Each structure stands twice: as C-alpha cells, then as structure tokens.
Image 1 (cartoon, protein in one colour):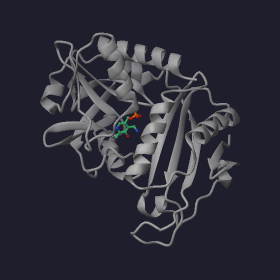
Image 2: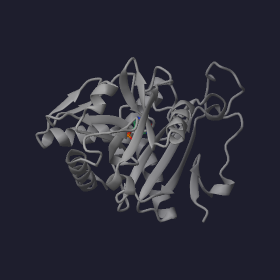
Image 3: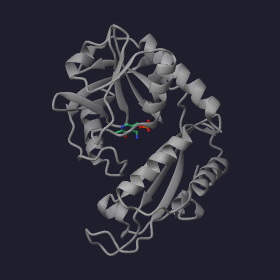
Image 4: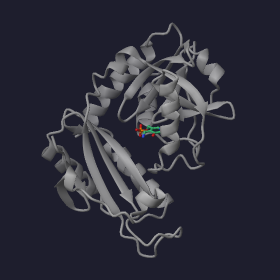
Length: 284
Ligand code: PMP
C-alpha cells in the first residue's frame, strides 16, 4: 500500500514524491535528519528530537525550513493520513538544490521531507531475545554529534556485522567503544553500575540515551559516563543499546562471546519497562 509522504509543504503518494538531482542532500550528504518513534499514536520524546534537529542545523549553518510547531503539525498529519499508531517518522532537512559547488550556496532553499514507517517496536522480538554484536573499527568522520545523512560508514559496519552472522556492530576507536551503528552502547558492570560513553563529538547524543539515563538515576541506579573498552564490555554482567526505534535492547554476545550468562539481563529489561511507561506518560 502506498504511503502519503511529506515533501516541501505537500502531502503526496510516495510514487509522486520527488527531490531534485541537484539537491545537496543527494550530492554532498548535506543534510540532517531525525527519527521519532510512535507508540499508541503518540510521538515519543518529540521535544528532544526537535531540540537535536535545531542543534544539527545550527552546527551546519543550515537554515530551518519550518518552525517547531509546523514540524510537529506535519508529524501529526502524516500519522493521521497513514493511520500510523506504532512505528517511526523519519524527517530530513537538506540544504536543497543548487549548482554543484563545495561551498554552500549564498541563499539556500532547504528541503524538508518526511515519511512514516510502520513497525512493531513495543513487542519487538529483539527485546526478548537480545542481539549479537561484533566489534569493528569506527571509520566515521569526526563530528558524529551532528546527525547528518552521511550514513555509508555505519551502513558498511552493519554489513560487516551481518556477514559475521551478528545483528549489529559496536564501533571501536583507540580501544574504546564509541557506539552501535545506529544506537548508543551501554554496559552493566557486575556491581550493577551502568557505564556508557560520555557525550562529545565522538558519538551521537542519543535522545533515548538521555531519557534512559535520567530514569536510571531516578531509580537510584549508579551511572558512569565514560569510555569503556571492548574487554570491559566482554566482562560485563549485561550490555544493551538504546535508540528511538529500538528503545532499550539487550546485547547478549560480543564477538561471539556471551555477555554475562548469554541471556537478556534484568537491568536492561527494567530500563526498557520504565522507558516505555514513562515516555508514553509524557508523550502526546
Ligand atoms: N547513535 C547513532 C550513531 C545513531 O544513528 C542513533 C540513532 N539514530 C543513536 C545513537 C540513538 O539516538 P536516538 O536515541 O536519538 O535515536
């Protein structure tokens, strides 16, 4: 069934949704994006996603194509037109069409596109079984805090994981885990402390990561934000990843070695439960 997608102010069937071949998003990956999950017909953590979009745009001096209120209304319209109650909404802002030139155009006309993806995220099988990851070198650029559409490096890392029979890759730089290909990486030490990499240019500042860590602290769990090594991760009691499209998902093996007893652990399960309940309560 054809979706209705949003392209620069219009709602059109996906077959009719078109962007110029001169769009800088296409030619230079000169664009940023956000993915917001939808649960029970509500937008989860939406203010956080809007705030990060603003930050990404500012870091790239990319003009905003719409106000926060317009972007929110567009998300709700897409949900309504596509009958989406569970899944994701992807939105992308690019610097728009201009004569091909490395320098930014003087007066860019940004493009804004968005579409829905229906998916069962609350009851996803991975949440019950956990996922297996392999470690690979982090070959991405140096500004991973900006959520750009240049996703070929993480895409290659994900393919390396699939070829190795795993579900995802944890990327490693200077011996320390940065993050998953499309999620933030966390471990739970044997003393119960949650360890996750601190915020910097090295990782994306996950909206789910921030919410989950806040809930963990409210629940009196100990949290340490610092880099951790692959060895520390292999020795952990539990490991898990966070993202808007997977919430909290246990990691049960790293490079073929079981994490803890090789089964999803109680801390990840509890954090997932709290995250779903609390973020739903705050959502609209
Ligand atoms: N890190 C990377 C590299 C990602 O691509 C994502 C998801 N897009 C995340 C972390 C998780 O971020 P969020 O919780 O905001 O979805």
